[in-house]
Image (cartoon, rainbow, N blue to C red):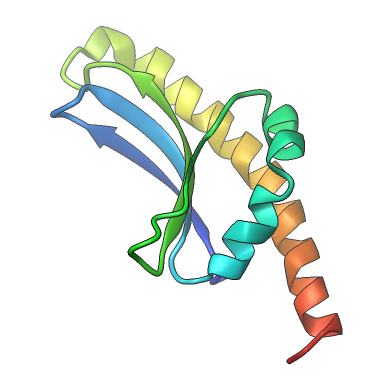
Length: 110
């Protein structure tokens, strides 16, 4: 529900890793705002996340990863359930914080 960020799902075949990611294309202020609530966000999502400020780029990302082999069909049901579960956790958690951030931004315009 916002152009500030999006949730993506990836399968890295070289490193045998799946991830769910909250990607912020070009808003370091949003990333910093979220990072200030890191402990609370991780508590709500019930997992330790990988926080990536990407200092040499405009973008930033916050993600969680799981090992797995995309070519092993016996893993698909488990992996897709994991991705769906964390996708919903990310949506439910980050949407609240993005809403709070946008409300602050409109209350305090530059």
